[in-house]
Image (cartoon, rainbow, N blue to C red; front, side, top):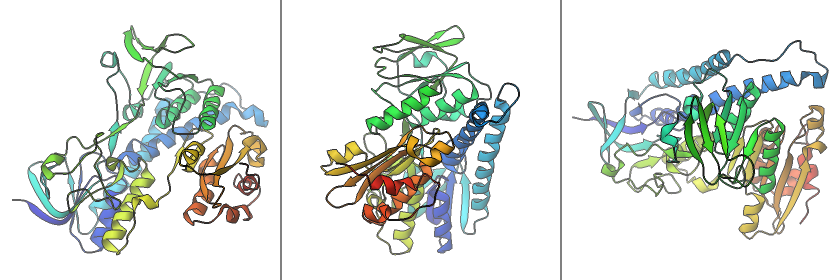
Amino acid sequence: MSKSFDAIIVGAGQAGPSLAGRLTAAGMRVALVERHLFGGTCVNTGCMPTKALVAAAEVAHKARRAADFGVVIAGDISVDMRAIKARKDKVAGTANKNVENWLRAMAGCTVYQGHARFVSSHTLQIGDEQVTAEKIFLNVGGRALVPDMAGIDRVPYLTNVSMLELDVLPRHLVVVGGSYIGLEFAQMYRRFGAEVTVIEKGPRLVRREDEDVSAAIKTILETEGIAVRTGADCIRFEPRGAEIAVGVACAEGPGEILGSHLLMAVGRRPNTDDLALDRAGVALDAHGYIVVDEQLRTNVPGIWAMGDCNGRGAFTHTAYNDFEIVAANLLDGGRRRVSDRIACYGLFIDPPLGRVGLTEADARAAGHKIRVGMRPMTRVGRAVEKSETLGFMKIVVDAETDAILGAAILGVGGDEAVHGILDTMSAKAPYTVLQQTVHIHPTVSELIPTMLGELKP
């Protein structure tokens, strides 16, 4: 016999726990099911642990540059990988425990730890128990994708998850995948002291960005001694004693790279293949993502999907916004939609990239007549003062409506400064409002109005 609830939430990632809080506050009896770690990817294997490592790598990098600022540090700079890992584990572990404690203490919420699978459209099996509810919310996240590349089954490899368990410094880390996850790990381990090579099948790094942004990111990484191999159209792997031989077919450079460790960072896949969704009749797309409408409803009445598993965003902030959309529409009489949000995200190398809206290429492809403003970080006082002048700022404006279409700030503080642009776009204000706003000196943000005053066709 199944136990009945008003709502069942599968997954304790960014959307699930907050939704449980809203639903229980509204008087509903909620079952929340988590099969592994409370807090989801962000807390356990994504944002929090990786940014803790990024912070450690930045300290090591600054220590090595101390003499540039007139600061004398005696002796060589070295890192203790076990201590770095212990700090990372503490940061992630504390957040994980806080989420679990919050849920277990939540009045009206019953926490199940186990794997949930559908029995029918509104009944789930969890171990030996069955639970049923009229409303079911799926927040099951995603995991690393490891394609069937030649020889991958013959060599040991790491993903973003197993990489976090490493407590030794690789001699030579080979990263396959020149996008966000791979590049963050590449730079942090280079700063820890490892030799690093990034291999990308495509013609350039982070292909979703404009070409000038991709080129600048490549320059940042190469400046720190990271080898970048793009156009690797025939990647293959082979064990070579204690080493891993990674074959690449590139126009230039050696055809084979020997590494001590291999990180596969070529994409993500949704955790939808072991939920028995077919028994519920929930539709998936060709890549395994749950198909949802603008209000995150699936094709089955009473079932919603939030976060990475719905293919409508692959970030912590989009998952949390999914919760906000569902809660507002279900409990507050709202009519919020996924398409109302403006695309925004960051690449957390150092200096970071903050991105909002359309790229220049996307704006042109969409048929907009545009004006573009650009400013190198060498002409940003804050960057000069900090001796961090790599990168640039770029903003794209619709020439006919004066609406801001998108922006990229690749440079010191770019991940924070870009929010002023995002807020202006969200308010649907013309670029002139931001251009005429006085900003604090000396900051990175203060040059955004100046850049807007220099727009060119």
